[in-house]
Image (tube, rainbow, N blue to C red; front, side, top):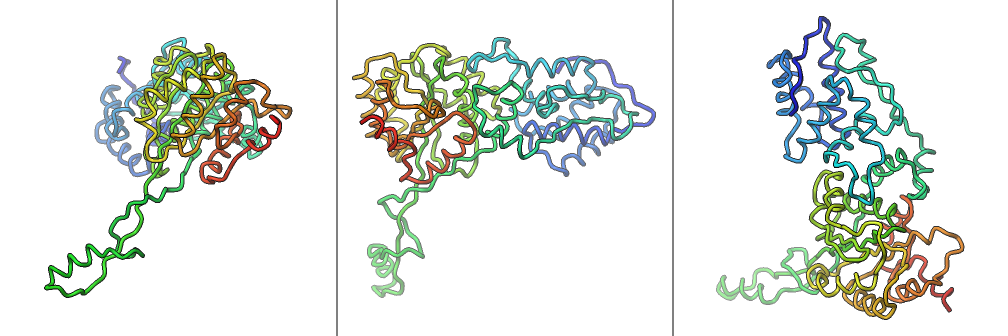
Length: 420
C-alpha cells in the first residue's frame, strides 16, 4: 500500500454513506459483498476510528477482502475512491487503449482497469465529485450515470467486435462475462449403484442374500453413469483475428470460472505461427491479469497464420492429454491459412476423429456474400460438425444453442452447397 497523509475528520461526516458507495464499487469490480458485510464494515470503522489512513485501510480490508486475488482490486479502488487528488485522470488513463493483442504496451497493474471500470461503470466522461468531502450533500457523494437502455444493449449485441469503440468494447466485455455455455451430460456405458435404477444388479443382490443366509430380501439396481465432456478452444490470434480473439478469450475466461456450467475441464490454446497453451492463465479470477499473462506467453499476436502446422502440433503434443471424455472443440479462426493445404487436411481429419464435435466459429460469415472460395476454408469445412459466425455477442449467445443441440450444423450445409 502506498503512503498517504492522514485523513482529517470532518465536522459533519457522511462516512457510512461513502463506505456504502465504496462497497458498491467493489461489488461492481467482482468482489462478493452483500449488505451484511457493509454493515460490519461501518461498525468496524466506528470501533477503530477514522483518524489514521493506514488503520482505515486495513479495517476495510479485513471486512471486504476474503481471497488473495481480491487484494489488488481493493487496493486500486481504495486509492482511487478515497482521496487521491488525481484519481479521475488515472481512471480515464486506465480505460484508454493500451492493448496490442492481449499484451499491454504499458505494464498496468492487473486490477487497475477493472477498478476504473467499476467506478466509472462504462461512462466515457463521468462527472464525479470528490468523495473525500465528507461534508458534501448526501446526493453528491458519488454520482455515476449507469443507465443502459434495452435498445443500446440490443445494438451492442449485434455490433461487430472490430467496429466497437473502446467504451463499447468495455461494455461488451461486461455482457460477455454474464454469458453461459451450459452443456448436456453424456451417458456412459458404465453403470453405478442406484436405488431408483432400472437395471437389475444381480451380483450385489446375491452378495446381499449371502450375508443374510441366502434369503433374497431386496433387489439391487443400477443406472448409467453420467459424465461431463471437456471443452477445448483453439483460438487464432493472427492479425486478421486480433479483435475477435480478444472478445472470445474474455468469453472463455468467463466459461472457465463459471460454477455449475457442467464442463469437466476447459482448455484453451492460441495459435498464429505457433501453438501456445494458455489454460492455466484463464483460471485466474481477475480477467485483466489472466489475459495479460496469456498475452505475455503467446508471442505471435497479430502475426501470420499457419493453421495446419498449429493443429498438427496440437494433435501431436496435446490431443491425448485434453481430448478425453468426449471433448467438444471450438475452432475460432477465419481459415485463411498460409501453410501446406495437405498438412491442414491431415490435421483437421485427425482432429475430427478425436473430438466428439468440432464447432467452427468464423467471423467472415458476417458478410452476406461469403463463400468458401479460399482453399484453406474449403479444406476445413469438410471436417467440422457445425459452422457458425463468431463476430458479435449474439453469435456467442448462439454458440450455447449449438453446444446443447448435437444435431446443429449451423451454416455448414449451405457452405457445402456453394462448394459444389
